[in-house]
Amino acid sequence: MSARPRRDAPPAAAPPLRFADIRGQERPMRFLRRAWERKRLAHALLFTGPAGVGKLATARALALGLHCDVAPFEACGTCDTCRTIAAGTHPDVRIIAGPLPDRRDIAIEQVRDLQRELGFRAMSAHPKIGIVNDADLLTLQAQNALLKTLEEPGGDTVLILVAVNAAALAETILSRCQRVGFDPLPTADVVAILEAYGRSAADAHALAAYADGSPGQALALDPEFFGRRRREILSGLAAARRGGFKGLA
Ligand SMILES: [Zn+2]
Image (cartoon, protein in one colour):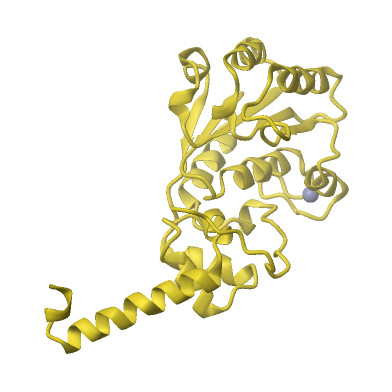
């Protein structure tokens, strides 16, 4: 499906920050909470599932939760620690957002930068956290470099890889990661998220019908185009019904 970016998109709602702000991913969140409560959270996690369903948001929420002293795991979202992590300026939480501009893959230099930043002495008593978004776009060399961090026994670093296509990752990486699966969202959740981002109820329903359970994908669609398309289909169905379905023959 071709996503037509909306040029005059309304101002976006604040992106989800804490677990409480993330909708429709209760199962992976429950899994992470249980692992954290039992002190069995792995040092390497792989979040996999369709694009735009909240994997990266959950990774960020986990970073907040592991660092916030006001509300451990839940995160308060307002203390200095939460705010610096959300702003991307916390020295112990580093993220590779994806390939550099004009690149199709994540280069080894980006992994080395991340490792260098995480290699400094921790600024707090909490684990250092490295998040690699679009990890399925890591070059093979970059994956090999990343292995070094994954192989550090008992280190105080939590590495979270976020990927749509886990099969693109080397077996050596996969075997060292605890896998956390994310599913498409129910349509009602997609609609609610779109409305929170300022779409009208009609637009939200029209877009959700084409989004395959992915709010991220729905937000990239043009509501006018899909609203019109949906009305055409509905009126076509109504006409077919009036014509006893002969119109469809
Ligand atoms: Zn906090």
